[in-house]
Length: 124
Image (cartoon, rainbow, N blue to C red; front, side, top):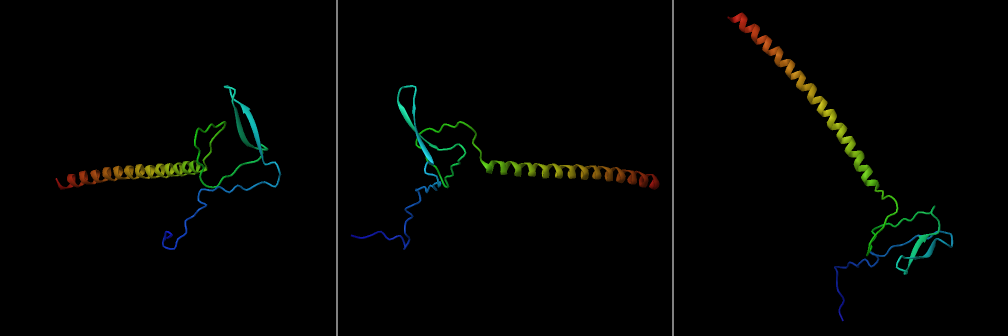
């Protein structure tokens, strides 16, 4: 029997396994049976205390629906929003500089027109 050769590389067999870090307390999780409106019972796995947070590094795959009773926070969106605000401030500052330069160009054009009119008067 021959084995596959992947150029000496060994396949990662733990890529889809989540490692949960347990608390020092014995009762980290509770299993609660909750009746549904159709009479069936569903089992819920919940933290033993609302004060405890759950952190799962990596991806979560769910086969079925997800119901949220609260907010979904994504810090990266906040960072993007801050970057957009900073960029908008820079754009506004650049627009103010362009407006000031446009005013200077208009003033210089008026001065040039005055000088050309005076030269024309002197030469005629």
